[in-house]
Image (cartoon, rainbow, N blue to C red; front, side, top):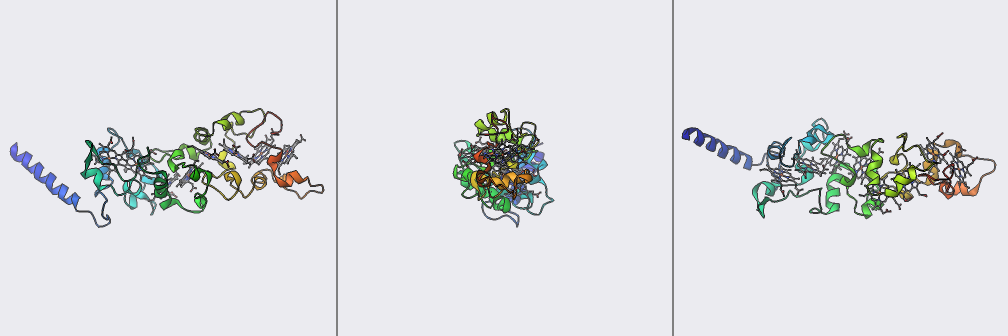
Length: 248
Ligand code: HEC
Ligand code: HEC
Ligand code: HEC
Ligand code: HEC
Ligand code: HEC
Ligand code: HEC
Ligand code: HEC
Ligand code: HEC
């Protein structure tokens, strides 16, 4: 019995020394053995379960830029060796980057995501109203569970209504775009990651946004109406109105 215990202790020591020596791809500050070591405590059940991420695009190894081909969990949570070796007030020291509180400043959280996602769709994130208002990527995105509700027109609106409560009432007005029926959604007109146009519209201007679907209003017409050329929202409230057809 004692011999058996000694053997397992020895094994444990050997494994932990092996773990303490970081594999080649790990640089200083990273806990080794990620993700298996992390999942040892944060598995499918138990304390702060995190295994759900393995069923999402971020958990797949198929994509060359997947976190699982980089630093594993620490691609997002940052180099976190201290989380496994230090205690603060009886709890493990926090990982370097956490997203569900204000321990990590919002711009640091966002830079972590942008490290892999700063491409065309988000090229106007810096300077956007959301960036300016300290909205974080994870105020809209859920990465540990799949599917991510904000990516689907059936569920996206509810995410926006968390903060834009007035819009819920507007889309229920008598004359409105078919948002309630899920035939379109907020991102049919907006790029919530920012854009060079007013109100983070997906197209360069209000009119260009409308012409995507109302091409017949583009003209040229024999008798142009200057307020129409200027801005459709001079007369229309795009989120809904009590005056048919969506007049202000
Ligand atoms: C030995 C068990 C153990 C291992 C291994 C472990 N953790 Fe943790 N982790 C904990 C505990 C305990 C907490 C809760 C601490 C608290 O309540 O403040 C925690 C909390 C966290 C949190 C939430 C922190 C917060 O305040 O929001 C994250 C993120 C996290 N761990 C990531 C990781 C990552 C990444 C790894 C692998 C590098 C890892 N953990 C490995 C025990 C572990
Ligand atoms: C793509 C970035 C990303 C990767 C990769 C990632 N996480 Fe997270 N993690 C987050 C975000 C964002 C949150 C905040 C909550 C949420 O969005 O679900 C979070 C939250 C957590 C929490 C806190 C959960 C709670 O209940 O408070 C733990 C623990 C955690 N992650 C551990 C892990 C472990 C372990 C891995 C690797 C198996 C991992 N994370 C991989 C981004 C990531
Ligand atoms: C190490 C690189 C890396 C990091 C860091 C990272 N991602 Fe990703 N992300 C990816 C890859 C790779 C994909 C899959 C892309 C594909 O399949 O085309 C992806 C996909 C996504 C998707 C689309 C998911 C879907 O269901 O289609 C969203 C949304 C996303 N990431 C948000 C985030 C957020 C928010 C963070 C920060 C918490 C983050 N990512 C951090 C690499 C990363
Ligand atoms: C205000 C809500 C919101 C915020 C904040 C937000 N997103 Fe998104 N994100 C969306 C929506 C909505 C979509 C779906 C867009 C579409 O269908 O055109 C999306 C799509 C994505 C996608 C997948 C499709 C693509 O464009 O490649 C990625 C990756 C992504 N977001 C990353 C991020 C990152 C990184 C941040 C933080 C810098 C962030 N998002 C902040 C709402 C948001
Ligand atoms: C048919 C296109 C369209 C759709 C769909 C749409 N918007 Fe808009 N939104 C606009 C336009 C155009 C503006 C510019 C404001 C103006 O000139 O009246 C705007 C402005 C805004 C503004 C800033 C000004 C204001 O009215 O408060 C917010 C916030 C907003 N939209 C949120 C949303 C949300 C949330 C959704 C989904 C429920 C949504 N929008 C759906 C076209 C649209
Ligand atoms: C975490 C809260 C939060 C969430 C979630 C959120 N927003 Fe915002 N949004 C803000 C804040 C704060 C501002 C800047 C202040 C303002 O104008 O209300 C803003 C501004 C905007 C604006 C520009 C307003 C202007 O005055 O030009 C638009 C458009 C917008 N949001 C659309 C969306 C859409 C679409 C979604 C869902 C995909 C969404 N938001 C989700 C908080 C949020
Ligand atoms: C993604 C496509 C799309 C975009 C972009 C779009 N619309 Fe629409 N619009 C629709 C659809 C679909 C309907 C409903 C048509 C129907 O019921 O026959 C509609 C209906 C309308 C109506 C008639 C409403 C009624 O009660 O009869 C007006 C007015 C209108 N849109 C104005 C606008 C304006 C202004 C913009 C730009 C801010 C815009 N639309 C952008 C798809 C769009
Ligand atoms: C000067 C005010 C004004 C401006 C600006 C305006 N509209 Fe209208 N729009 C109206 C009025 C009034 C009606 C109702 C006409 C009717 O009932 O015959 C209408 C009706 C509509 C309708 C529904 C009926 C139809 O003809 O299909 C759509 C769609 C529409 N407008 C789109 C647009 C778009 C897109 C723009 C910007 C290019 C725009 N409107 C700019 C006043 C305006």
